[in-house]
Image (cartoon, rainbow over all chains, first blue to last red; front, side, top):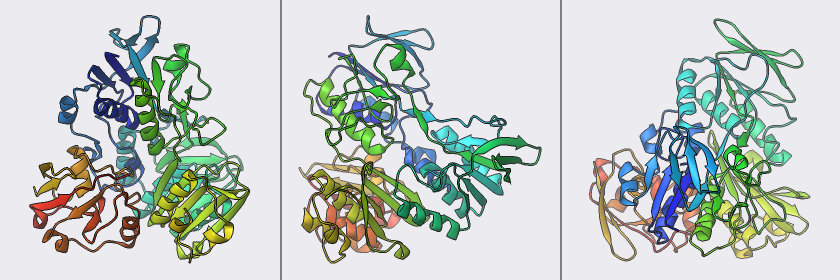
Length: 403
Length: 107
């Protein structure tokens, strides 16, 4: 390999570039990003950044000099139009060509757009990148009432920030509970109570029918006729993986760029990592598509092993986190297929963990304000999750001693 | 800007100026100090930005919050009495010249 091009300058793209260099790759290395900023951390965008606690420069992973030192050529504001696999070339939006002999796709995901009448309203914001967060930050400062469409992580994190800034907040969720896709009812209930306790109004089982715009405000109208008049609407209804480039080049895509446990696509000279992939993880029977820092970082390292000809299969326990008010939720593992939930500690205390069992094995653990239990849970799940329900429920049992 | 001296496990020394108000972890990561991973991005949630702080600076630091104390039990290299998580240390003029030792590994 003499020239590797990475398409996508997010967490996974940066990780591939750095790990390749540290792994001894001495050829040309290009990192192409379609945003204007050097690689930056996304998680704070829905948290500290909206609270004005950090400025954009502090979100950068590395300063510009770092890339020069590593001999990584970073091209920002660069759109790739297509991949010509036969000649191993990228065609950029400006018509120029770039050759590669290895290609890494870390194209990420984009927000799912609200598709109801009236959704094209300047008071409607989405949150994915720095520019989105900046727009919300500015509009939030001027707003008195905010509607959040979608009670997932992004929606609830923004709701928490808006309440902390003293805004009147209404969360509108289509399902029967918040965070339904990711946590058990007991955890949804904890977060519901947390938000209502802070004065957030939560509307469940409400589909947005349309938006109405007037000069002074916009109104969210739900299917049952409920009307919520606000100054700002933040939509957090999930993301769509950016597969178009791969798909148009004939790589196998199934709601994600399909990669094997070595992060390899259906073309042996093209790897992919991060939010854009539908991937194999040896810990799971079914392919996964995850939106997380952990997956971006760990899968990027797997992709580098493949690029360097020293493949190591992906077999990491996924983990996630969310910050809302004084609560830190940390999730280890994937709960899909659990049949019993065992609590360790009491939700009313604001600090507890929930263990998801499938038969006699722990497959996932949600920890609320218990970071040490989260760390122990990751090890427990990686080791096969063998423990008893009595052990995890008993606060006198040290989780580390179970391992 | 307060100057911080990082000493890696192999004794290689680096001096870095970090703006006041930034965390020690942020300053280290942005300057590519190897030996600090910070996989959670500074949320006091992962124990991969573990450092050892020399006196007299250790005594000048605010006490650890309970979550930091818990996480210090989870570090890859066993904690010492002068162990801290660098994401929890905010730089100020008072910490100018601080000497920080890095553990051999973080994961």
